[in-house]
Image 1 (cartoon, rainbow, N blue to C red):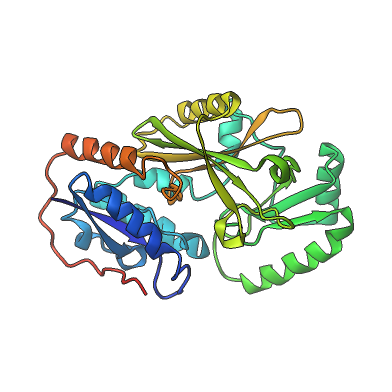
Image 2: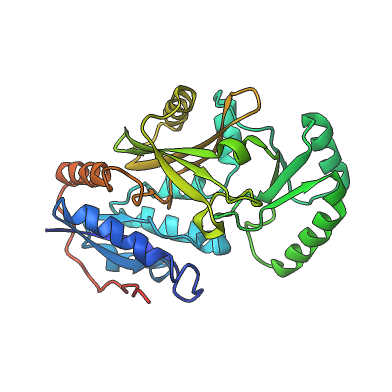
Length: 322
C-alpha cells in the first residue's frame, strides 16, 4: 500500500481541532479504496527541514487551514519543500503564490472575470468612498489578501465606515510585527450570494469531479459550515460557471492534482471568480456523490506515473485527532 502524507494544522494554535479530523477521515477513506494510506503530519513540523517527509510517495497540504496566520513561515516552508524536491501536490511554487489573493489581479489580466477589486495597505475613508462611488454598491467587503475561512472579513455599508476603520485599526495593532498581513482587498458585496449562494467546481487531475452550491444561513453572508453554511451537490454545474472554471484553469496553467474554483453570479448573471483554491480546499466529500473516488483515482494515476520515493530518513510528527 502506498503511503502519502496529509499536512494538517499547526497543533500549537488549536485551530479547527474539532473540524479537521472528520475531513481527514473522509480523505483517508477515499484513498484507502485505491490502496493509498494517508498519514497526518502537522505542516509546522517541517518548515526548516523536510527530511521526515522523504519517504512518502506524495505530500498533500490538504488540511493546512491555519497557514495564513503565520504567512512568513508558510512561505519559508514552501521554499524548504521546493529545495528538498518533495513530491508535492500541488507544487510548492503554487502553494506560495496561491496563498496571497493578489493572484486574482494576474488572472484578471489574463481575461478572467473577477469583482471590482481595490488593494491597499491601509483602509481610509477616501479609498472606501471611491470604491462605493466606482461600483455603485450598497455594501462592500474588506478582508486581508492573506486569509482563509472568512478570517477578518468585514461587510459594511457607507454608514459603517467609521466602525470598520476603528476595527481595522485595532486589528492592525494586534498584528503589529507580523509580515504578510498588511495588504487588504476591497470588493463590492454581491447580494446574489444571499439568493443564489456561491458555487464551487472541484477538479482532480484536470477533470471535473463535482459541483457544490453553498448558501449562507439566514442573517449571515458567509458560506462556510463553521458559520452555518449549507452545502448541496449539483447534478450539473451552471454552464456559465463551468466555462469560467475552465478559463481559470487554462490561465493558471500549472500541473495541478486538485483545484476548487469558487464563483458567484452578479446581478446580471455574469459569473465572477471569487477564489481559485489550490492549497487546502475542502473537497466537500460529504456531499460528493462519488465520496472522493475521482480524487483517489487522480492521485493513484499520479503515483503510478512517479518514480519510487526515497527511503524515509526520519519519523513524521504525526498530528493526533482530539
